[in-house]
Length: 317
Image (cartoon, rainbow, N blue to C red; front, side):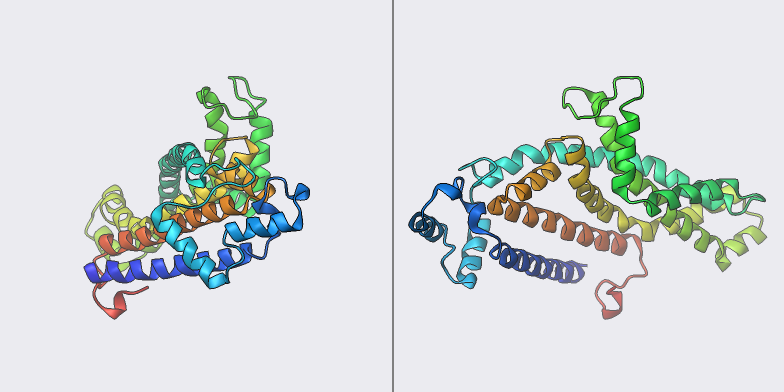
């Protein structure tokens, strides 16, 4: 197990290093206006002095080395446009709790609705008219087929017109204003869980051991709960950490749409204002979260499925 974790961790760190190197290099090709508050008022000499102080006149490998040294020391630079002179880690620290709270609530909501829907769809495939499966499939096709930006806008526009205090924009001190953005973030995961759980359960339901259990007179409910669901949830478990990534990535648009003071809205504003240092820090965090989600998904799969040989070559996926 330790060897498996070590190998996955090494691959994850290598992937993160490659991503950050690419992003770091591309940001160095961006206009230098993003490093100065009043760029248009500065002379060429002042700009050169400022760039030299920031280390941007050094060769790219030297800049990269200095960047990683700063990351491990907790010095990620300061904002040059969004909040001039303020450390970017302090700015991000104020936003993380909002995004994390909203993401986890929406994920829990998605699990509570998506898993039962997938079970209903799978069980409905064995009924005469398959009504549950057909209705669930229509829902999944609509959510997966329509661009998320479209139904996010529709939810905001029509949801804010409903009675009950729903508003078009987010207010931290008004719990009712959390409902629409959380529902928007959860929809994609609800369809995702339902679709894959239904698929895995149908696959398990057609296997020989299930047919044998039916031939022995085991009840359908016991077969589904004790065998089909338990085996189908194993491959789905690896996607749950990944869905956290999708939720956080989806928050980029949703947080901007509802004016939520979280990480997603912060990244959009940092890009709009060309605050390169802040963008660089946020990309590093998002990349780390993404890779961590994939790593945890692999470990879940390995722990839940005894067929994976952790210490052998064939255990790799």
